[in-house]
Image 1 (cartoon, one colour):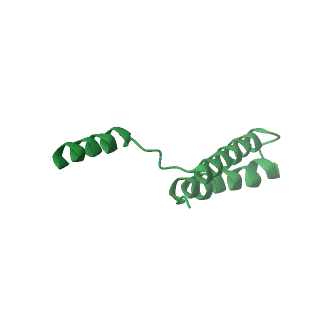
Image 2 (image 1 turned 120 degrees about the horizontal axis):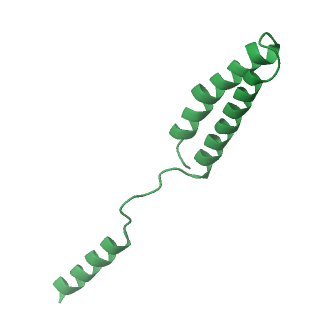
Length: 81
């Protein structure tokens, strides 16, 4: 009898276990979303105004660096609580 119940329990846990799990939490998704918004704003600042304006030469590249090199990796590597 024990063997039958063990097989049922093993089958039950195997059926409930997902094949692929989502490893990102809500905090990760929010950080990636913020990173994408900052990146888009950086590209907008690069394209607005004359080529030698403060937005095009300083603010746009700084936002792109923050978005690509700080926020995006932070959103990917941050652990869920």
